[in-house]
Length: 178
Image (cartoon, rainbow, N blue to C red; front, side):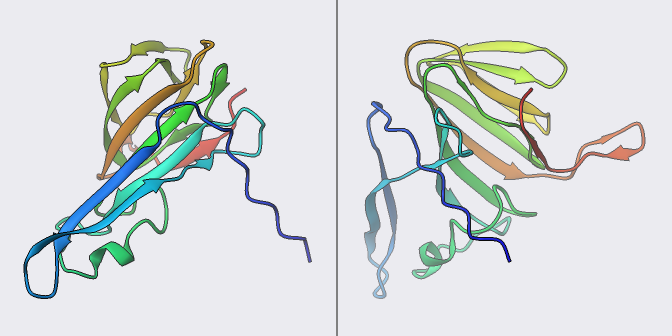
């Protein structure tokens, strides 16, 4: 039997901590703050300069409930499930790159700090700076930071039907960049 692998330790980011505030209702129906915390990220991999991914909120159904106990059931499972949505942040250290990946989702992303390259798997490179928005439609891509400064991108991923090209259904994919 193999020994358990340690959880990758994220690099210390100099970017401002992400404060996550989730509102909802108490048992009397009054609006309230359900959660107010600093969200912590996980390293994409065990490399020393790994990007950090922070899952901020997710749903596993297309029309999520706003019930009181809903918050307890989220932020589990794959990056994006077969239904629902995921809201996340990725912090990229200087001179880092995420693994190439594709999710079965429609993704709306905005760069809020620094400069990032969206690299598609056939060599296409799209430079993005703070304030730029990108819509990912099931493409294989990696995020690169080729600068000396940290960068941050927020992304909302909405589950979608798989992409079909030339009669072939494309699937969720994660693999190392070469």
